[in-house]
Length: 342
Image (cartoon, rainbow, N blue to C red):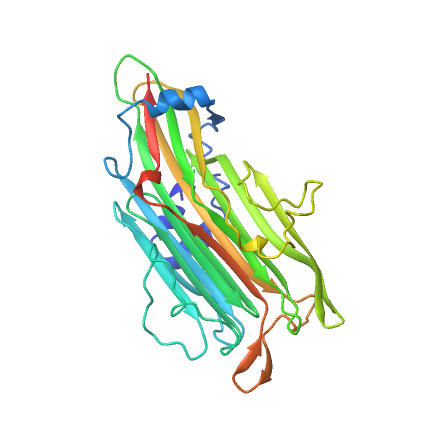
């Protein structure tokens, strides 16, 4: 299967299996050449912005996909997965594993989850929830959260095929992408100490090959309790073309570390990227895919341990560690744009 269509597989099972090898692109390698995407300078970006004609989901065929896959201790024997694929329309899904939870479906993104649809482990023990949406304009949204022993994964993606018009002139293909603000968040409870991690990854594929990516992951290290208080190290790691967060654990300052009160709940800055994919001859075809993946999960501190599960203090009251990932789009103005430059 062409990896660019993984999220559009015929079945949910095929989708999940294919997503695991999305970036491999081995099937497409026989017919395509990997491209090196170049980030445009400020002056070049201004030149691109001056063009009034470009391809977006509003005037060019795009396919959208969304996937959520969750698990929580004691609530299901296997992960609970939902998938939505569409052509030219929004793909939006929700999945939840919550003890005593009603079967009704909460509003889907981009309607942001409210207090009435976001459950906590305090009175429900281990749980997981996940929302994922790729709107009809190509703007992504993710909200993944869980308490105790859980995992929550979400993907929002689009794909499109762009052909350089037939003629006598080659054209440069430029793609503008917007990565919305993201949070990678978590909480360690002193009575249910866990290892937790929240991660966001954005990846562009061109003809099945990775051309651009960005990733941010926040997690705790060596959590424990000392005199009844949590002691741990929090780290924010960034890879590829990094997102800009208010926190920075790698610089010399300590005032902006992840351990600063309230710091880890602060979102990254919106990132706008202009990429030149190269110059192509008339009639050339490019398959483009943008995949945004989020994960949040916990693990025990020790092999075969169970302290990461919600711990019951009394009937109907639990203490739990938590992980949360959000990616919040900001509207149709941030839709992807494909420019064919002279």
